[in-house]
Length: 182
Image (cartoon, rainbow, N blue to C red; front, side, top):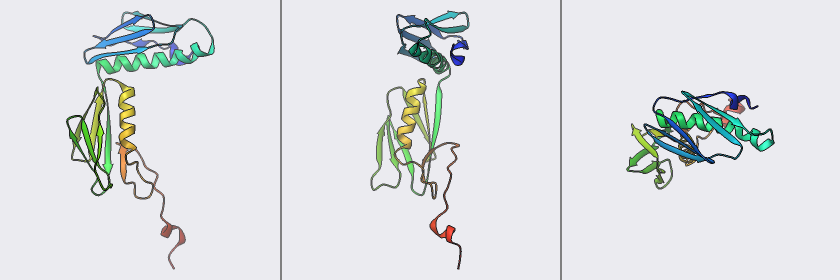
């Protein structure tokens, strides 16, 4: 069995899990999430724990076993607590502003870049350089943060760009530093 798939998922209070055929539905105080799971995977909810099992030992079932367990754990945490990630823009004149569901990013280009936040993702900007995004779906949140970061990823010489909060950038030394002074 999958090591990760064997671990039971703790179901928080107020979270309801239902499996209708191959459709998984998780409802909680913050909202509801649904996803189709592969055939051969079954979920049994007993009190505050949910266990995931597979029907056979074929390769696709083994691969999906741990995946479905991780997805279920993320769904349970998302509908009860939610997820959030913070992006920071570093550089002179690098700013972010949120107007409704549109994010304006000034990141050293000749024009501001307008990014539409997907449905289910909300944001908040602090000090024009710090963007905090939150959602109940961890997958959509991660993809959204990655798309925003790809507008201007941190460059390796001065570290300017958009990065995750707490992300360490390995800076390279410039050409002049390698030759030595004459």
